[in-house]
Image 1 (cartoon, protein in one colour):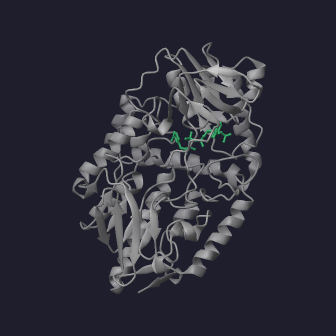
Image 2 (cartoon, helix red, strand yellow):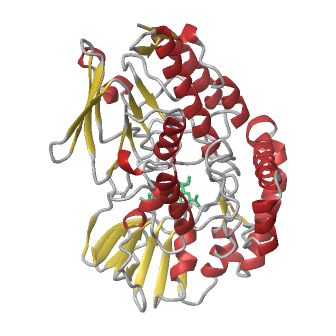
Length: 478
Ligand code: NAP
């Protein structure tokens, strides 16, 4: 078996394979370490906005009682994943610094051939794509050219020292709100270029006290209970997104209080107040983003960027701001699933041509015409309200159930039935067309044509129930 990606999906799948007694598999990873996005996103302030007890594997996997903070820092998450890989015996299966370029299905042999940069190739009957939704940085094409240092937040060089520099951060999304407060005290001047304001809410970001960690470690059930309560709190918050939007009024009020507590300048408050409804984009959590914007050396720029010229950024009103460093906190090419890998299925059909800019998959996991290929965190399995690891754990169990069933049936090939996939995707898109994410804002959930290919339209529990047992009527097994 070939697993592509050693982030949470690939590592989780590897753990479960090992626990089920499977040893014939490799995990191919383009980076020199496990960790996925948590290896790549090494920018100052990098941390998680989902609580650590929920943003880690559950008890059937690898519980961790001693998270230092309620919301884990990037270094702790990376350490956890490296630890998991070592503890559960994944190291011999890892092929790091192995960038997959192509995967091709051979119908006669019922095998996938996976090619990696540098000429290496791997062959196996099953291919598990765990490449995530946020692995390819997006840098907008701005007019002109910049003569200073410029890089994407996810390509941060840890040797970069911004002390005394004049810096521009482009974007005010989940990454930017962590970078801005982390670098503001060190830089000479910081310009934050905002296109659309975000809803930023307070983050209950305390460290766990030693007695709490001791309880999680020593009193059976406390860690489980903590995780359950956090899960239920997040799941309940979906009520406003999915069932009754008026319930979001409370969050809107909390947002206004949070903003006004940090910013006195009315004009700045107005510029930081979104002009779209709360929930349309991902809601952000930070206690220090707004205070950072109130600093004397920080300026929020809301004019659109017209061009980069030498060492300046020119905005639409003609103003030119001199900067020596540009940080693109502009997000990822999230709707381009599995790109840039070329996936060639039955009859030589290429996955990205089949999708034609509108990725869709049965349960976000299987695509007709691509036998023995399973995706983890595939199309429409992202959540805006809860931990995506809850979805990934469900997907891992589901794929393993498919593999078990194949083995029991003495079969070697499984493929989702095209009409079953079509029915599933059509229903999903109908629901998403009326969802809170559909209109009124731009977001990484939507393709250029406004199709939501990222999010699951309902509660995470509904998805787990749908994936509890494979419905064999949706599959062709040979
Ligand atoms: P993002 O939230 O999509 O934000 C991208 C930002 O760049 C937006 O503010 C966007 O403005 C701006 N932008 C894009 N093109 C621009 C242009 N041409 N000119 C000016 N601004 C431009 O991206 P992200 O911050 O990388 O986060 C993406 C996702 O990664 C998050 O939603 C989250 O799921 C994950 N993430 C999670 C954490 C965490 O704490 N767990 C941390 C970082 C990231 P508009 O709003 O106008 O489009």
